[in-house]
Amino acid sequence: MFERVALVGIGLIGSSLARVMREQGLAGHIAIATRSEPTLARALELGLGDSYTTDAAEAVRDADLVIVAVPVGASGAIAEQIAPALKPGAIVTDVGSTKRSVVSQMAPHIPAGVHFIPGHPIAGTEHSGPDAGFADLFEGRWCILTPVPGTDEAAIGRLARFWEACGSKVDTMDPEHHDMVLAIVSHLPHIIAYNIVGTADDLETVTKSEVIKYSASGFRDFTRLAASDPTMWRDVCLHNKDAILEMLARFSEDLTALRRAIRWGDGDALFDLFTRTRAVRRSIIEAGQEVDLPDFGRHVATHPEQE
Amino acid sequence: MFERVALVGIGLIGSSLARVMREQGLAGHIAIATRSEPTLARALELGLGDSYTTDAAEAVRDADLVIVAVPVGASGAIAEQIAPALKPGAIVTDVGSTKRSVVSQMAPHIPAGVHFIPGHPIAGTEHSGPDAGFADLFEGRWCILTPVPGTDEAAIGRLARFWEACGSKVDTMDPEHHDMVLAIVSHLPHIIAYNIVGTADDLETVTKSEVIKYSASGFRDFTRLAASDPTMWRDVCLHNKDAILEMLARFSEDLTALRRAIRWGDGDALFDLFTRTRAVRRSIIEAGQEVDLPDFGRHVATHPEQE
View 1 (spheres, rainbow over the protein chains, first blue to last red):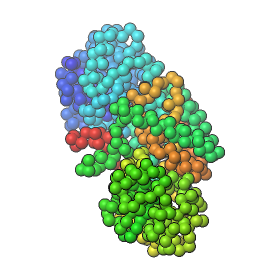
View 2: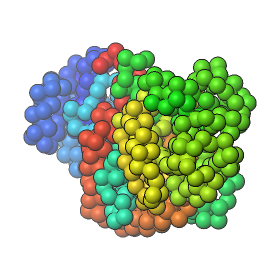
View 3: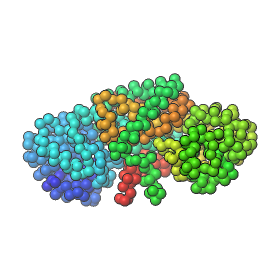
View 4: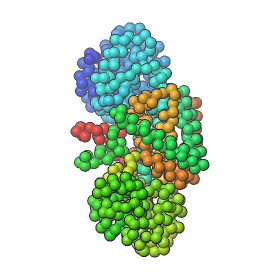
C-alpha cells in the first residue's frame, strides 16, 4: 500500500500500527523513530520495524506516509524537526486526541506539496509503550480524519483506505467539531475518573486497603481510565481546554441538580435519570462498540472454560 | 449447611445465591419468594429452588436461614411481613447496599430469639433479574457483615461460613463505617456514572450517534454502571444520603480544583494527579479484585482463540 511508512513514536498506538501493517502487508519498509533510546531498543527487540533511529528526520526521509504518534504537546516540535526531510507528495498524519491544537502546531511547518491530514483513531487501552500494542487494536473502531479545506482528495482517500486496511471505519469532520465530540466521549470521562480516584485516595475516614478490597462494587471501573498515560492526558487537558471546560461546566451543573435531588429525597427524579441512562449502553452494544457481555466480559476473560 | 433456606427476592443476587447453594449443597431446601408473579414463574422455569411463593411469610416458615435480597427501600415492609412466621433460632440476613437504614428498618420487627445479622456481598453486574445470576458471582469477593452489638457469636460464625462456602471472603464492621466505605467505593461511582451519561445524552452540539460511535474512547466504561437497576440505585441514594452527600461534596471540591488547573494550564498539577492515580489500579489487581488484563479483558473475552 505504501513503499515506506515512518512511525514517529512507538507507544501503544505506534506499535499497534507497526504490528497491523506487518500483518496486513501495508508497508514495504517500516521506519521507526523515537527520542527515547530504551524505547527504541525495545522496539528493535520486538522486531516492530525495518529500521530504527532516534532522529525523526532520518526516519521520514523518502517515506510516502509519515504517522506522528506522540503526545499532542510534542506535535509542533516533531513537525518542525521533520519538515526539511519530507518527500514531496508524502502524506503526513498524526493520531493525537485533540485536533485544533495539532493543526495549529503542525500545519505551519509542513512544506507545500506534502499532504497534511490530521487523524485520530478512537482506540486504545490503559497500557502504554511498545509492548502494549496489538495488531487488532483498531478492528471495528472508528478513525476520524480532520483534513483542512483544500486538502487533496486523492491523498485523503489513500489515508482512509490505509486505516480501513488496519481494521478501522473512517469518518471525517472538522477539527473544532472533533474536539467538542472527544471532549464529551473521551476527555471528560478520563478527567472524571482521575478525579474520583484522587478523591478516594485522599480520604481520612476510609482506609486505602478498604478502597482496594471493596473496589469491585464500582470504583475499580474508574481506575482503568485513571491508569492511562499521565503525559498524554496532561497534554490533552492543556490542548483541548475550551471544549473540556465547557463539558466540565455542564457535568458539574447536572451533578449539582443530582445532589439536590438526593438531599431532598426526590426519588422520582433519581429513578427517571437512572432509567434514561440504561438505554445508552444498549445502543453502544448494538453499534458494536462494546462487548455484549455483563461486567465487560471480565468473567468470560477469567473463566474461559465455562463458556 | 442449613436445612431450609428462604430467599426473599430472586434478582441478580438472590438467583446467584440459589445457584451457588445448589452447586455447593448448602441447603436441604431452597424456598423462593418474590412479590412479582412473572419473576416467580421465571425462577420456577430456571429451577432455582425447591418451592415458590409470592408470600414471603410462607417461604420463611421453618427456615433456618432467611436471606432478604430486595431493594433496600423494601426491607422494612419485608421484615414486618415475615416477622410472625420466623422460627426461633433462625438467622435473618440481607444483601442490601446500605446498612444503617436496613438496621433501622428491619431490627424493630425481628422477634427475640431470631438472629438478625445484616450483610452485604460486594459483588454484582449491571444486569438484573433471575436470569442474570451465576454460581461464582461471589468467588473471591468480599462480603461485609454488620452485626449489632450483642449478636450471638455462633450465629455470626455460621453466617460467615455460609458466605465462605459461596466463595466469599468475610469482613465485619459497624453499619456506619460500612455506609461511609460503600459511599466512596460504590455509591459515588454509580452516581457519577449516571450523571456523566445523562450529561452526554443532553448535549445539543454533539449528536447521540456520535456519542455512541466514538464511545470506545472512554465513555462506554461509564455506561456499564449507569445501566444498573434504577430501583436499587434510587433506594441506595435515598437510604445512604448523608455519606453520599459527604462524598459528593469532596468529589466536587476536588473537581473544582482540577478545573482550575486546566483553566490556568497548570501542567504539573495535572501530571501529579494523573501519576498518583495510576498506582491505585495496580494495587486493586494485586489484591485479586480486578482482572490482570488491559481493557478489563474485553479483547480476551471476544478473541479467546488468540490467547
